[in-house]
Length: 394
Image 1: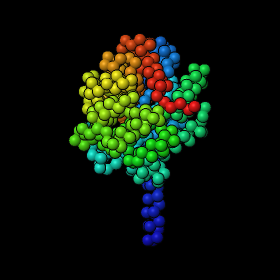
Image 2: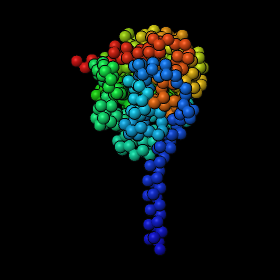
Image 3: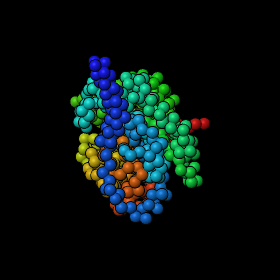
Image 4: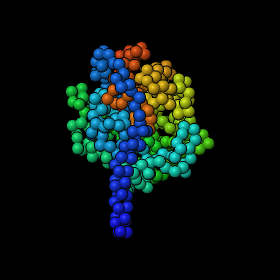
């Protein structure tokens, strides 16, 4: 009898574990990345659809690799995958690797020592053990997942490492190929683990963009959301990393950097950083949005401002609200410095997924932007910037 009871308990625990690892990660993702699009979709005119199909579209920021989905398959949750990006006519998507997120994450103040949200997520997803306790390993595992997808479907997905890769992608798309370019980025520089040699490791793995900080202060310097409001700037290690990134032709992203860190980077001769996913503080007074004066200075150095899609940065949940933020950005920094930075799949809401991106083209038309302005914001500015900054493969 005891043996039967123990066998029954063991069987129940096995079934419960299988159910947990099968359904829990998907439940978490579905709850963290909602889409607030009406059931019938946002209305898009034939004129807007035609314009949208002619655009070269790029997006600076999506965290989809975090969720351990096969992005070659059209998903029923989240915001992006390769089929939906292609359906939305996206030419280039930056996929960033998230490696650490503090428990109780907020826009005001987070401790570097706070318990980490990503460790239990990776365990629950049964990601490789080497990614459980190493931030570098965690970034590399996500990069490997993307590389394997690109090798499996080279006709649909290419990893962009050089300006020649980008030029070839755009030429092939102009010739009618339905192919998506993806560039790898890191959400924060903490996967470097305080070792400059790890920048070479990430670069060799395909990384071409690094956000210096995320929601907490790290070895590179202060976060906009760090302890004490973090007035900390670049550390000595941070300066070394920025200078090495410039030499390699990597994109410096200040999306979560403290004001002091932004000032420190802008003071470096030749630095041309971007703000990958944000709103405009003068339009939406969220602590997540950097002060307008610093945003202008980033643009003044030749950088780009990527406007996000979620309510916390645009103060609304419709395509029109995103368009209003884009108009505010153009008014602040000029039409040559505004781009898209959705933060898709980044534990945020969005009014449409990647397949329904034409709703934004419609909203920009409704907001009074010209076709030339829409073309710049939706991707033209991003392609021009990357053609200048990315390393040459020759």
